[in-house]
Image 1 (cartoon, rainbow, N blue to C red):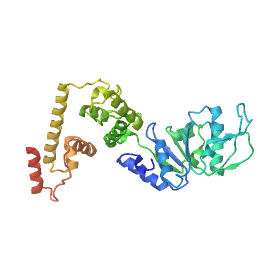
Image 2 (cartoon, rainbow, N blue to C red):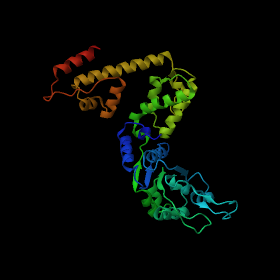
Image 3 (cartoon, rainbow, N blue to C red):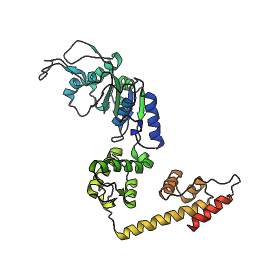
Length: 339
């Protein structure tokens, strides 16, 4: 888990996240991680901790929305014996347990307003006071926090302290949603297939072309976590089959309930053959100029690259400086047309 590449993918936005992690992992600056549910906020925090100089200390995480408000203060700061009903002994809080390491506040936007001032004091004074005590205890902890809320809107509405917000967000890392890094989806699918095939002790299958198209078309509101769950579910339903077909997908991913038939398989093969021939001819007409080809066929350059990769076509050739094709390009075009 200590490898920075646990944040998988090659999309520019993911590469930027990994670059930021490398810059901040050996500092003690608070890190504020933004991202939708399922984008891997805790994974990013753990990666910072486990690749940084505090990795020998503990990584302690708490979800602010998962603990009842009346218990949260005691959980965070600890309590003295007899400080409230049920406090049978002195108990250190989770912040103290993270001494020498990292304390991660997940869903910090759900932190009750009354506790926000106390957390701010800890950040500023590097010290805590347990519930029911007057003694102040020093703590050596790096703070990281995360939220899927629009925290600036929470500040404007008076539900989150502005001074705490700016104290927590010395460094901000924004995790991209999966729908904005679709180029990583096939890679992630393969990664989860490898993991869960080993876990379930089953032969490593592949998704059928139609099932893969449905995966690529789905917007993934639950992000990487949802994709991970989908792959695991499909493996279980496939029951050892070497091909995961479209009927094994969840209703959200396959809302029309498409199923495999020999006719649909032939249709998919015919569609793929047409796409490949169409792209070959467009590339040849545009002298293998990628931007020009994309414009002619009505695609973005990124969309064109995806189709070229799908059909294993090369588009690295650029036109000669004078705009005319070289003899090598003409030969390649003839070879591709003939193929």
